[in-house]
Every structure is written in structure tokens, then in C-alpha cells.
Length: 210
Image 1 (tube, one colour):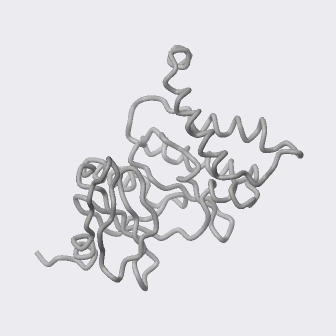
Image 2 (cartoon, rainbow, N blue to C red; image 1 turned 60 degrees about the vertical axis):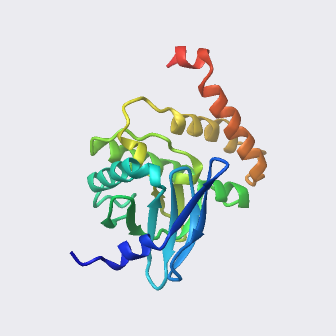
């Protein structure tokens, strides 16, 4: 079977693990590193409005889960389209814009309509039989046109209840919408809040409430 160009690109990406962290040693010249997370690295493809999400060696199962979830969401305006998938990669739309995290860091206003758009996107996932989970500021994108897009759906197939988005909405209504609340928030503050939030999730009292 003839190898696709995208599959060839994937074979050129070299990873190494050092001190529990994945580092990228090299990749094809047509690829530009766009971002790296816990389970994968994303590369923008030269001269195409697409990206390749390449999963680290121990996350092939996650790649398959995300592929299946995106297939269930095919046609939804809130999620990127998948063009090709392999055992450890996905080729999808490049969504140009700012993450909600970047919007807060740069002082770009997030409106109540943006929050409603996220809700609409999550409801679309539920209607497709999925269970939206792990919704955080890095997975929500505000495009240049002002539309909201959601990415990273691998955990949408898990069964446990996730309250992360509801907690974010509560903070938005309780604090962000106040007239005197700063609309530009330092990155270190958001990272600190995120760590405290994750710690709170493991407290026994939290588990009893859920």
C-alpha cells in the first residue's frame, strides 16, 4: 500500500524521553511545531491549512479514542474536521485563533456568547453519545472571526462525570463578569489556580460531594 505524505511526515518526527518529559529531536522541514501536551505534539503543515497531531509512543490508544470521537462529531461546526488518521496520528483543520487561556493572558474579552457557544459545542457532543470531559482553557479556541472551536476530544469517551467546565463557568459568572475584575490575568496566576484546582479534585470532601 502506498504511503501517504502525511504518514511520511510522521515517520520523520523523533521523540526522546528525559526526566519523565518528552522532547522532540527532529522532524520534516515541512512541519512547524505548534504545540506539545501530555500525550501528543501538534505540527502545522507547510502550505496547508492543516495540522498533524502526533501521539507519543505510549499513547496510541489515546490516538484511536480521539479518532473515533471526532468521527462521531463529523459535521459539527464546533470541532475540527479529520482528514486522515493512523495508529499514532491525526490530520485535521488548523484552527487559527487564540485559546481562552491566551485571551485571558492578553486581555482579550470573553463574552457570555462565547460561553454559550462552548455549551452548544458540548451539547453537540452529548447528542453524539459522548461524555465531554477535561474541558480547560487550552482546549477552547476563539477564532479570528469570533467563533468558538473545541479541540482535544480523546477524553470525551470516558464514563466518569467531569465538572471542570461547570466550575469554569461558575468562576466566569462569579468573578470575571464583575466590572472591577481584571480582564488581563498573568499566566503565572492562572497556572497557580490550575494547580490548586487539581489538588482540590483529590480531596476526600470533593469526592464525597460527587
